[in-house]
Length: 602
Image (cartoon, rainbow, N blue to C red; front, side):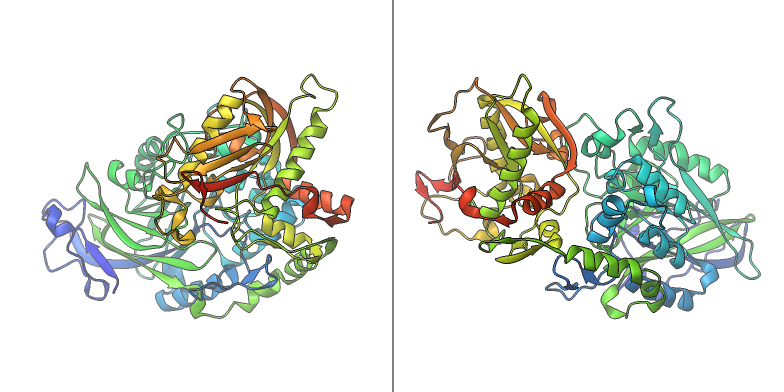
């Protein structure tokens, strides 16, 4: 059952204050009403408006998985994509009345699928002028605003600005400022007017905020161009401005999760600040959260200053859910005031795809399907990533081989040409498989799902030990002799797969019976214990080099190579040049999990 919170008009002098206990007592949405209390200054007129929201669409339009070349499917029978979302939006508009609804998005729209990669790298829209498929679909849906996500910066500012120009609605980012002037680099907020028949117009303010982590994760694209300020501080600045400009309802589209955590250190403001926004900034009625890829139908958070309740919702990523927020308002002294709010999530798997949206992007979708299914070489045997997070596998060694070779080539003729080259890689996609026989572009895209570029940095033997110890926190401590279940062995402390790195070029064991910080044993290079002072070149990606995952040393290590080439493209180029992938040329089991010297897996 979905619930609503009745909080009473903020402006009503005679409104009864709700206690904290009462604030947690939620009445069913179907019976919610302002109540029978006479509100001084109220003429009794009420209105209801609806704000729909999506988040973390990541380039999904059709219910299609470009990596498997089939309709998207998972264990929960979820569906994905804007074509499905469009059908849900049309249902809500028909049910509520189109004139009383708004539609907003929370960011991370132009990265995540082969479709978006194609129009960023193969036929980039900032060079071709072609309408981005996400812009085409979102324009057709009639979005009122979208917010910058951190992945909007992955392909550089020229492409992002080209995409922004193609939108029929504003791209919001109140805490993103020009590096030199400190002025707004994007539109901070928009105030939309909802006109209901026979009623005074209702003005809905939409404030867009994005997680500050882009300053780290896309340092090479934004440094010297953009600064990312504290989300709470910027909301404290803009919410009063929006109210003064006449906003009756304030909705924050926050590309930031509610957890209050950060994946980086304390050099930047909090990454997932949506709960903090609700608690610390008065005047917010609701928050559309995102970034953490969570599913939150409805949550109420108490503002510490006013005691009022703030509605928070987060739709599941990739267009699997649509958040629907309903606000009931009452007119007090000629102004609208929110007296209740509730939200629910609608499931994309309950509706067919909207043929209008499918037809709009059909040619682009087909072009990308044909492209990613192009065979570019062969593999001598099947290489799966299914076990890569807990044992050394050929498919991860393939990535490390390509990265190390590229850094080695880049160092030729330099003062660092004689440095031994190591390489690190994370198991991004457990479902990735390089099949025996023909290998396609989509096989490579499925193996390396992010548009990361190649870096080479200098690290010492001692720093490498620290780095691997930090990475090994990914495993849950497991006593000698205790059963080992691969399903529960990894992701300790919520560490995602992409923040577990394995290294080639050195040999080591990870003793999972030991506490964090004491797990790396027998670390050696070229058959001898590693020299703490020896210098190495380490191949890595821009996400890690810029501080993503908060690994030690790497973000401050001297940069030897900054190739600005996507690692995924390096994998493709290797196969085209070699004609085949043969694990006998690169696979070496150089690391393993142990307990007191005994291998965990044979």
